[in-house]
Amino acid sequence: MLSVGRVHLPSDIPIVGCELTPYVLLRRPDKSVVTEDVTEFNPIDGHFLRYRWYRVQSDRNVAVCSVHPTEQATLQCLGCLKAKLPVSKSYHCSPKCFCDSWQHHRVLHERAASAVNENGNEEEEVFGRFNSTGGTTSSMVSMSTSQSNPSFSNGTTALYPAAVTQKNGGETWFEVGRSKTYTPTADDVGHVLRFECVVVDAETNLAVGAPVALSTSRVIPAPSPIPRRLISVSGMDVSGHLDMDVRISSGGTFTALSYNILSDAYATNELYSYCPTWALSWTYRRQNLLREIVGYRADIVCLQEVQSNHFEEFFAPELDKYGYQALFKRKTAEVFSGNMNTLDGCATFFRRDRFSHVKKYEVEFNKAAQSLTDAVIPPAQKKNALNRLVKDNVALILVLEAKFGNQAVDSPGKRQLVCVANTHVNMHQDLKDVRLWQVHTLLKGLEKIAASANIPMLVCGDFNSVPGSAPHALLAMGKVDPAHQDLTVDPLVILRPINKLTHQLPLVSAYSSFGRAGVGLGLEQRRKMDPATNEPLFTNCTRDFIGTHDYIFYSADSLTVESLLELVDEESLRKDTALPSPEWSSDHIALLAEFRCKSRTRR
Image 1 (tube, rainbow, N blue to C red):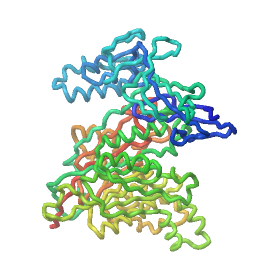
Image 2 (image 1 turned 60 degrees about the vertical axis):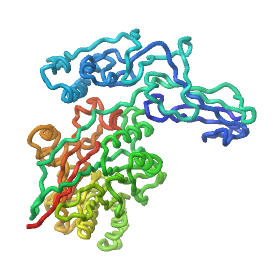
Image 3 (image 1 turned 90 degrees about the horizontal axis):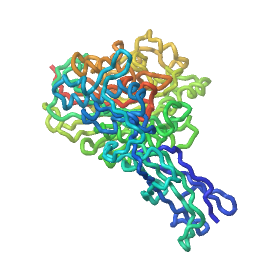
Image 4 (image 1 turned 90 degrees about the vertical axis):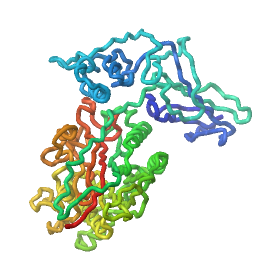
């Protein structure tokens, strides 16, 4: 007879919105093992599995800490209540928790105040302030663990028990699901969930033997970072060294997002041991990433490190619900030796109501490497050259036509096209020559497109190159200084002569607009910029590395930057961690820029 040998969950911490899929191992009479789902529609040996999910409730009510959602809250910040913030944000598990998170927490107060409080005189009363010992005078109320008040709420949901003991007669079980998987809802926050499966005789429809069950810890709300604002930088844009007068068109604007989302294949506990296992799981990260991406409402979305199976099974269908058309270019597989479904690549999405697809180009740097070695590498060195150059990296280039009213005022009725390049350049830091060669190859391809169509360009992606490096210089300046340190690494002599490392595209880094900010919010962002390079201090933040690898470049002769998504500072990241974290599900941060097309008239 079929029997249940083992049941377990990848993580015992359930999170709202993140699907729970138990692993169920079955044994047949011949001792063979079955791991597939055995339903009444595909029974094995005349038996199938019946599933039940229960929410376990008791009379005890608790609040959940907003910083450590697996802990029970013992303190509540009254400043949050006065500022009319969600109640769930006001709870903390200890005075130390409250003090340690104060710099992050007070930003919530400040933003609420800027939206609703015209008079800054009340700031001290509502927000509190740090004293000389590092404490805070913000009002707090202590919450006894025995306190029970049904009027308390955790956001919009009721507060639930700190612990449930099955031997306690005060429990109530509510059935919430009858399939193998279950996705916790806001109603489950604070509750323990119980999963049961039992073998059922397909003929009699009666259970055979006792059910096998497991219980989770309390359901926690999905942590969320502080929302990032779109900050206007209009009036600070530059048109570069161009011999023409420019004027802004009277039509609409569009936004473009670039984001390395961290492939699940790379998100290992070994690499990111500081991130809780549940927050590193793909079932959690995919929902958190989707929530973040959709929240930006970008017209064009360029994602890197998107696994093939995740594109097909998750991102393409999910973003389709929000009106996005999707295109994908998987990395080539000459070096990769794993499961092809987990091979990542570049995915570009655009809103159908804003753009239509005109043309797609795919860049495979492996093919370019083959052509290069055939042309300039001696036959005896060709194998070694290919071993160095062939790294499976790709780029996806789309030509899109705008549907919104953005035609040039001096060319009524003319099609407004935009070319969008999305790439992920080789990451190995000892292959500086390969990285520079890949960027140069991409730019030469874009030059040909620009020459044939004369359209605005966006070049987005993870270039694995810090500001000031040779690839960054090539992108931003159109050339590389012959004395640049990166050029000393060129064992294949593919970077010679140096004067060939140029391009004619008038590219400017979108986020350099913050470096030119003089006042207001732009000046605030300027403090998060490197003054030496005019780029963000970081877009990639792990325990081993913090720096900038991600960029959005645009052609400054045909586009102007209207606004930028604010940068993340280290205070917004929990000070005791790096990325990814429960709030931010990638080790990179997203970049987003709003552009407007220019109308150009030569003198």
